[in-house]
Length: 315
Image (cartoon, rainbow, N blue to C red):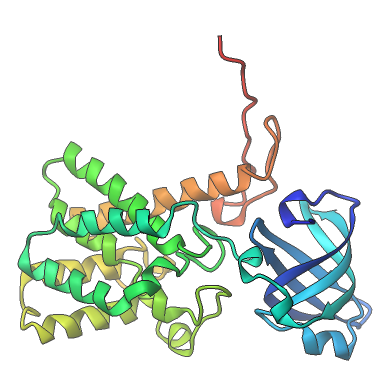
């Protein structure tokens, strides 16, 4: 079976893939084309449909699984498909699991780990907010991705990212006793819950209307304050600090935070968030190359190329 992870330059393929993004364009000669992002459970790949026909455009819908006849090319260091034909078939012929990337950690393991960190929070105000938010988000927390594209961009990615961040946060708080460990864990646990409302679906990530207009940071901050008022704890300092952590967790105004970190726990949340995301991006891209090779330039990593060291025989 042809999968994205097995594609090689100069391959000629006929295989099904899920469409996860569609962009319309006009080429230099004035002809319309489509730029697609295709996905299966092993990864994603960009595809171009040149001189696109009206019939092709009509079936190129986000979330649809189509049969693609295409050549595999290399463009600016990345593999890309040049599509010859694409055909729509009965969607019931496909197993959805073959086209969805998912966390390598089982849902049971994620739930057990997350619940363990929630149970470390004994401060009543923090615990009420964390418990209520997780009650509201329910199972969605364990199926949504952490990001649309760059890191942990798969089913279960949000819970995986959060659990890894909790593990980092716990280690850092143990190393630096001046840290308010419960506040840090509470901030980590809830910081990205707004993404569940920011995205339309956990499978094909499209932004909801409120996600586009408000963004996950402001939506979560508003929901947090509404919960605090519900429990009559909205004037407690712990709640103020937790709201600050949510608002500041992107670290800089130009990265989407309306305020910058002004307490230690907010600074640590930003650093831990960025560290875990970057480690996952390194792993994601080096998994696609052989030892001794460089990746193509990776835009969210400052357009750097990343080298995968050669494996040495153990002595």
